[in-house]
Image (tube, rainbow, N blue to C red; front, side, top):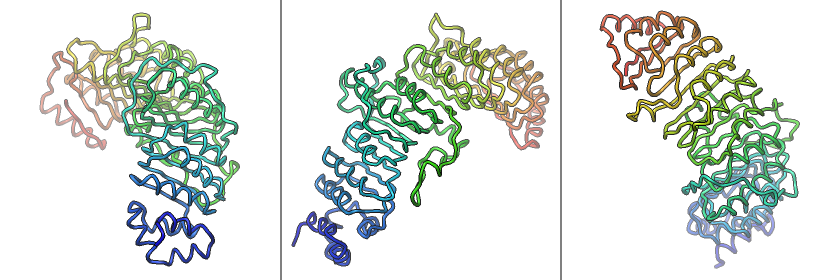
Length: 491
């Protein structure tokens, strides 16, 4: 009896041998023993040259992985569109076989994903993209803990390696690293330089997702993407290299996920895309950004940016960058979300945060959603708020953001009751949701002034005395908000 590896090779000799193997029960019995992770329903259409999607999940014997990839490389499969590899041990020879498989498919593969595969990204991405110039979607993620170095410098010019081919079809790139083996600054610079080369050769990249840890300089790659990828729409740097869940509800997932193609496609068949970054997400304590990087970013994207998600987890708030954005104006910025969940502060040579925020909001005429999460200050005892929303900030919003409909401010109060009343009497005519630290004795006035308000969440983040609300007034407010389709939340 032949070994299973030999049986697998037999399927690729010719169509007659392949048909015989498929109809031979002992072949499938052997497969169920040797490859328990691979279902017949997956492999059968692959053997019959009918599979559009192929997924290989481990853990699996390295030899079997090698043989499956060898089969893919020599099976002349003309139907695969999407490939997925999970929890596998891969070596350089395996990647060469995969590259061979990608070259043999027609129409070409559009999507490939690697999850928890033991091979550095630089050993995977370039060979895969070079083998299939029509690749649109590449995802490489590893779940191991990433290194948390804060002081990786950008790569030197000599460390930036440009691939020999242009990846003109690549629209989606996701990179999440384990950091395994990156034990020196030089190696981290080299990896950043390698990825910089890929970015520079991807002129049609639309979506870039990066791990906020990892041994790379995210700020450098981000600026390179803005310079060399004119169609870039979304740049996300987060712990898991994913769009944060808090904003997913407002985004069509299909917008930034790779399409599952039903057949041949070309760049001419894609919908037209207006150049310019629409969404910028930066969250995670170990993002590498050079001083002044945010100001440079805002200078490039102010005309098109629609969403800013800036979570300052352990890093300093660069308030100068807010002034830079205010200087240029942000005519399309509709959503701003900021956080200091793990603590931060501005340095002594930075402008005061409240003044910077007031300046920013003065030039965001399209702003609809504002969320400022300063919960770190509410957990402390110093009485200091980092992202201060004081009376001047509220005034700037009321006078310059006529479309504001959602405001959530979490953390110690920096405004006064009079400041809040000035806000509701000046602006907020479209405000439907308000969550903020609020004195109970002005609740009724706030609800009466904000005619569109549906939900009012009165937080109690401050340690100062908060006036109480009598039961009759509370009942009346609850009735008003209920009739508008909302509710009152205290505490």
